[in-house]
Image (cartoon, rainbow, N blue to C red; front, side):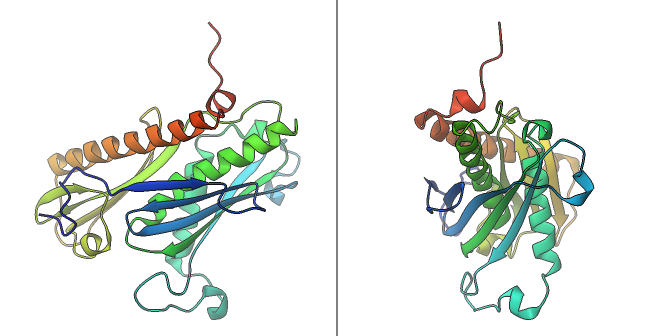
Length: 251
C-alpha cells in the first residue's frame, strides 16, 4: 500500500486555476497533490541573438523554488550567486517540452518566457511545471491572437508530463516526495497529446530494471499523461479556446 493509500495506477488530485495573476500574458496555478507551482508566461518582442534574421520565435523557461517550498528553508539561488545544476536541467527540460509542440515560424520574432515558481514541493515539480506551463502558454497565445498579433495558432499539439517509478518492486504512477525519496527506479515522462514521446528521464536509484518493468512504467505514464491532456483540453474547451488554438483540419 502506498503511503497516500492510492492504487499503483492512481494519480494524485490535480487542480488547475487559470488567470491566477493579473499582469502576465498567461498564468496558471497547478496543484498536483500537495505540490503547487505557479506558471506564468511573458512575451518579449525580440529573440535570442542566435535567432536573429531567422524569422521565427523562441520559447524558454525559468524554474525556481521558493525558500519555504520544502520542510526546511533553502536560500534563494540569487543570493548564492548561481543556479544549481538541478535548476538549469529542469528549466531546459520545460523549454524543450514546450518547443516540441509549437511551429516557431508562426510565433513571430518574439520570445515566450515561461516562469515556473514552486510554491510548495511534494514531488513532481518539473512535471507539474510542464503541464501547467503549457496552459500558461495557451493563454498568452490567445491574448496575442485577440490583438491580431498572430496570424494563426502556432500550436501543433498539447504536452504534459508525469512521473513513474518502482517502489518495493511495484511500478507506481505519479510519485510524491515520500515515494520518490525511496524509489528503486525514478522516471519522468513527457508526451504530446498524440501519444508521442518528448523526453524520457529514467534512473535506477537503487536497483537496475529490465525491459518488462520499463514497459510497465511507460504504460502507466501514458495513461496518466492521457488524463492530464484530457484535462488541459477540457479547460481550453470551457474557455472557448480549444478550436482557436487547434482549428479543425480541412476536409
